[in-house]
Amino acid sequence: MSLGHSLRLVLAPPHPAGRPFLIGGAAVAVVGGAILGSWLFWLGAAFTGFCLYFFRDPERVTPGRPGLFIAPADGHVVSVEPAVPPEELGLGPAPRWRVAIFLSVLDVHVNRSPVDGTVTRVAYRHGAFVNASLDKASVDNERNALAIRMPDGRDIAVVQIAGLIARRILCDVKEGSRLRAGERFGIIRFGSRTDLYLPEGVRPLVEIGQTMIGGETVLADLSSTASSSQDRA
Image (cartoon, rainbow, N blue to C red):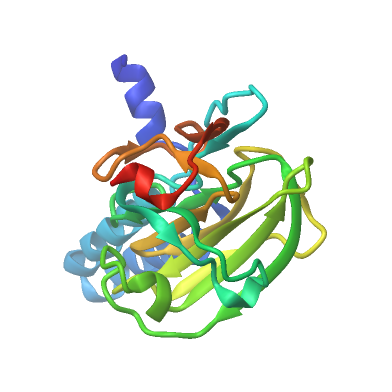
């Protein structure tokens, strides 16, 4: 990767959700610095710089081949196992493969659709704010869950999960919205987790510890199936 390309990723324009923080940081730097001195200027400037980095929203190149499931977030995989989707989505009690991605405060926090499809359900549930890297975060933490129906009629679930310091989940779509694979649908502030529940019978192609690039990394494809959850043991 060239230096220029790396700089473009780091200096990508911020997501609109970051504007209040950027304006606030700049105001502290300029106004506060003028009134109370240089220490407040540098504090405001440092906060503004952090927000520019945290809210960066780089463009991504999404694979176009039909049947692929794309990572819905940046971060690293912390869990790959069968699990029942959130009950509020109404997708039934049958376990399906779940890939959980943990986003550190240094990752891009924009969420993207894993597939082409139509949002059939958006359900927000209040909860705790335990460390998002822990497995119990999928059940206990505050979350926003989406059910997306693919063109072939099968459903997937994508869940935005708050973390230890994340206190705000933003979702820009509603029931009936149509999404393209790789299209942005929300963002989580600051440090979080995103879970993807694949259709029944489709198994993941990733392992715990792998680094994901939201909108680009292939997590699974319709040709990779598993007859039972024991196949991965």
